[in-house]
Image 1 (tube, rainbow over the protein chains, first blue to last red):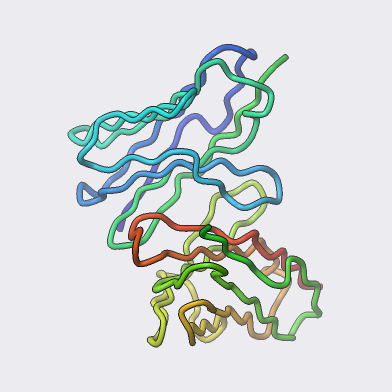
Image 2: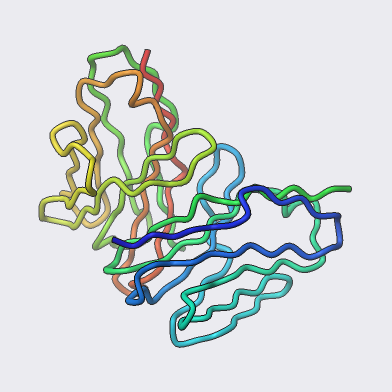
Length: 110
Length: 116
C-alpha cells in the first residue's frame, strides 16, 4: 500500500523566515497531494493541494511543489507568522483513500 | 459549504460498554465517508472507508467486528466501538467526500473517546 514519509518531525523558525516541509510517497499511482494544518484538539484543515498534472501551486504565503519522477513533494511557507504554529500533515491519495504523513510540528519563534 | 459534523464531541465510558459516534455531512451528499483514529501526538490513521448502502472496507489490522460502521444514508455514517477498552481511547475523526469534488475530503471536528 501507499506509504508517506514526512520530514522533519519538528521545525522551529524565526518569525518572518521561511519554513519548508518535505514528503515522499511510495506509490507512483498517487495523483492527489493535500496538505493539512491541525491545531491541538481540532480537525485537520486543508491549506493547499496539488494534483499530479501540476508541478507547483501557490496561494499567498503558501506554495507546494511536486516532483513526480522522484516522488517528492514539499510545502513552503514564507514570511512565517505566530499563527502558523501548528502541526502540518502531508498526504497522498490513491484509490480514493488519503494516507497521511506523520506530521511536522512547526514552532514560530518570536 | 461542505460542513461535516460529529456527535458527540467528547465521550467517557466504562470498559466493556459500546459507544456510537455519528458523522453527518450538513450541506452536501457524501457518497463516501472515511473514519480515522488519531492517538496523541501521532498522525491520522485510516480505519475504514464507508460507502453509502454497502459494507465498509476496513484497513489492515482494524477489527471489523469491534469497529462497526454503518452508512445508511448519503448524509450519515456511524462508527460503533463495541466492548471498548482503555486502549481504544483516542481521537476519532470522520471525513466525507462529495461526488462533485472526488479528491477533496471534508473533516469533522472529531470525537474524543476516553475509556475508563
